[in-house]
Amino acid sequence: MSTSFGTQRHITQLIMDEHKETGETQEMQEKKSSLWETIKFIALALLIVTPIRMFIAQPFIVNGSSMDPTFATGQYLIVDEISYRFNEPKRGDVIVLRYPRDPKKFFIKRIVGLPGDTVEIQEGVVTIKDSKNPDGFVLNEPYIEYPKNDTLTKTVGMREYFVMGDNRAASSDSRYWGTVPEDLIVGRAFLRLLPIASAAVLPGEYHSN
Image (cartoon, rainbow, N blue to C red; front, side, top):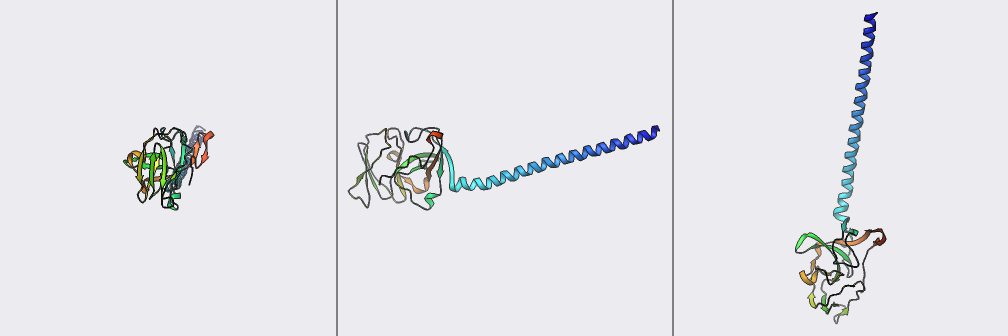
């Protein structure tokens, strides 16, 4: 009787151990499956997001006062990187660009002068001379709240743009470091997402001519 009982207990223990091992194996398989699904999700996300970030759109956070009051520090923007592959930048577009003297830095400015334009600034008033207006026209700039009474004349080269910040009194721009080559333009400000109260499509864009 004791031998039979001992054998039965041993068999029962083997069955319990087998169930335990089976349970552990299933748990390990579930963990491996979950890990594999996570890896696949991350890979798929990278395949989708990376081209979007590189070629279509990417986020930027405004830092500094050069575009006050149109844009303020901390505002979250989505920059459209694809439109300028099909259309030329326009006067009045708000763009993100690489700083010509240090392309690792990004600036946000407004396009004032187009290729071939002559930009004249007299006491802060901007006059544009182009092929259609050889005598020039005064640029209407209702977004300027902080003017600067500076004077300058600059002819814009081909595939270049003259840019300025809306806060003329506190902006480092083409008045100081020259025009921006076309290939340094990242894209135009397409969406302002944050703060919610200031959310807008094509924020700050203004075409006067």
